[in-house]
Image 1 (tube, rainbow, N blue to C red):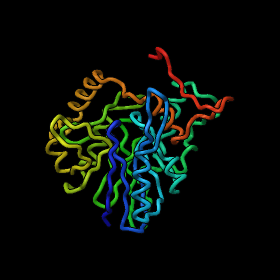
Image 2: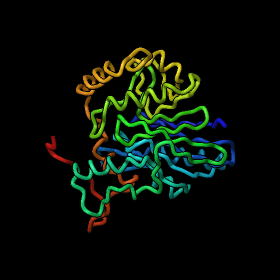
Image 3: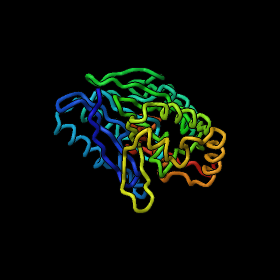
Image 4: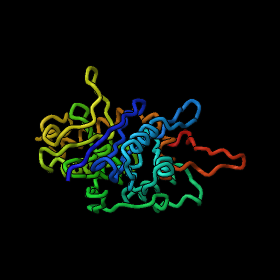
Length: 286
C-alpha cells in the first residue's frame, strides 16, 4: 500500500518534516521534526511543530511513531513536544548508541547521561518492519553521514534522511565523528538499487539559485543526474570527491546545540539549581 505524504518546510534550517498516513482518520507517523531555535537568545519556539500538529488534528490522524532518520546536526528535534501533544513513540536506529558514546565524551557529559539509547522509546534494527495501520515501514540501515542513519521505506516512498539530496545538490557530508564516505556510497547504492520509480523524500533542500524548494525526486532521476553519485561514479571516485569536498565545508550553524539535544531524544539537560537548563560550548576542542 502506498501512503499519502504531507511535507512541511522549515526555511531557516532547510529541513523537511513529513507526516505519512493512509487516509483521513487513520494512523500516521511523523519523520524528522523541527524545534525552532534562536542562537542569539538561546530561546526555542514551536511554530514549525505547531503546523504539523494542526495538520494532524485537522485530518483526525493518530500518531503511532515519531521517527528520526538520525541525530541531526543542523536542527533541534521537536519530538518530545509532539509526543506530549499527540502521543506516539519516539524511535531511531539502534546504532544511535555509537553516536551517543562519541558525543558524551566530546561534550564531557556527566554520569546521568547513559549512552545506551534509553532516552528513546524504541530503537530500530536494520531491516526491521514496523506498522502504521495498514502501512508497512521497512527500516533501512544507511550509515555514512553518521554511523546511525536510517531510511524508512513506506510503499513506493523512501525517506532518505541526509543520505542524499536532490540531484543538483548531491550527497551528505561524512566528516562528522563516525562518518565514512565508503559506507555512504554503499548505503546510497542500496537505495539506488530500488525500482526506478521509487519516490525519494529528502530531509533537506539547499537549492541552487533559480530553483524552487523541492522535497521529492526518484531513483531514476538520482541515477541519471545526481552530481555526486550518478550511474558510472565508482566507489573510489566518490570517496575521493567526498573527502576533498568535506575539507572545504564549514560546520553547521546549529551543530553544538543540536547534537547535545538530539542525542537526548530532544530533551533538554536537567535544570540546574536556578531552574535553567544549560548547553556546553567546547573551546578549542580540535
